[in-house]
Length: 189
Image (cartoon, rainbow, N blue to C red; front, side, top):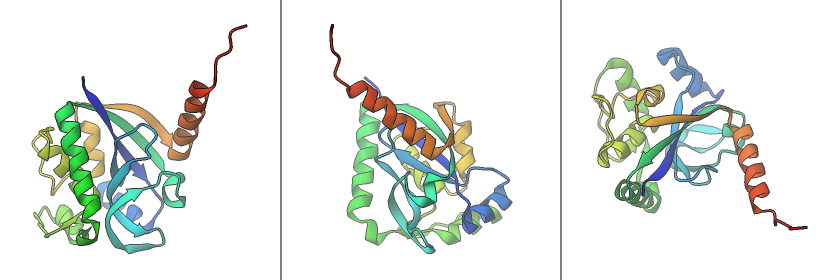
């Protein structure tokens, strides 16, 4: 039986997000992967401290944080095989274990703008990281290189299905409300 992972595109109002938006002309400027529909296991490369954009690396993201909670988002479901799911989970476990060895690839962002492949040891920007994970498990990047993938490019991948678009905080609230309703006891009169 297939499993599902979720790709979360977000648009924050940070300075870096606005700069990326100016270049790409796309609304969504960040991408994450989640292993659950509640987005409790959501990972990417981004800022490690909410107030400091210059210290970045591998992060376990909190969609309810001040930074992401107000963000607009698009959430896509991606069906994967059991083997692909296990490989993705194992990769994330590796990055969690060695997170201090990884940093954010700011220089790689300029490489995207100049169409230059900038390979840095132990460094990724968000879309490069997710694209690399996809490539490692055999999900097609539709002829693109992870070094040049932008967050909005994920919208073009035919195996992703849009399941939500709007404020991330509304998605979280709706999910919590639905799960509480499902867990209420049923009484038979």
